[in-house]
Image (cartoon, rainbow, N blue to C red; front, side):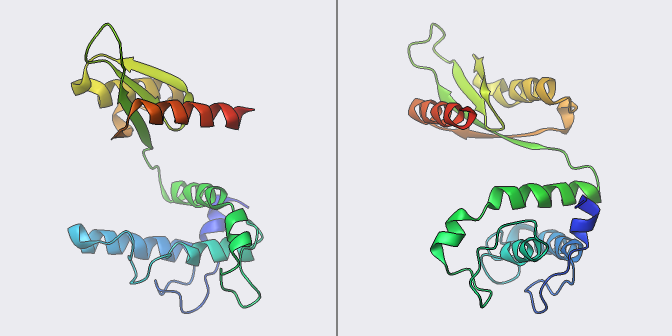
Length: 186
């Protein structure tokens, strides 16, 4: 199914956004962000939590995701919910959002001080979307800019269109992240 077709998938009547399609839902969500300004709630954009399930249900009904719901349409079966591939659904929705227009990418970068490094202010950085890539950066002030430069090199996106979110963590988190990345590659 193409991203344009995903945008036109019907939603259940009575969903919290009031929209008929995924496209309408995303437009309603954008409206809530815009007009809510700093009062916008990412947890309760339409008054309830778990709001993304309105879209996930549409993807399930279209056969694009495994059904985690019971026979009454509720997602109460813990085994099915654990097996539900939320990341796959999020990738489908990301492709539909890109269909609406070009969206600059956002990258999460885990940063931790490097222990016993010859430069006392050296940071280890791991980009979550590129777990096998590491950057040793000796100037904390320019960390986001340097990370954006490397990401632009890896992805081909223009450097000034990339958003980098820094997450300071301890060295043990970096080591655990590396182990998870290796396990995912095997």
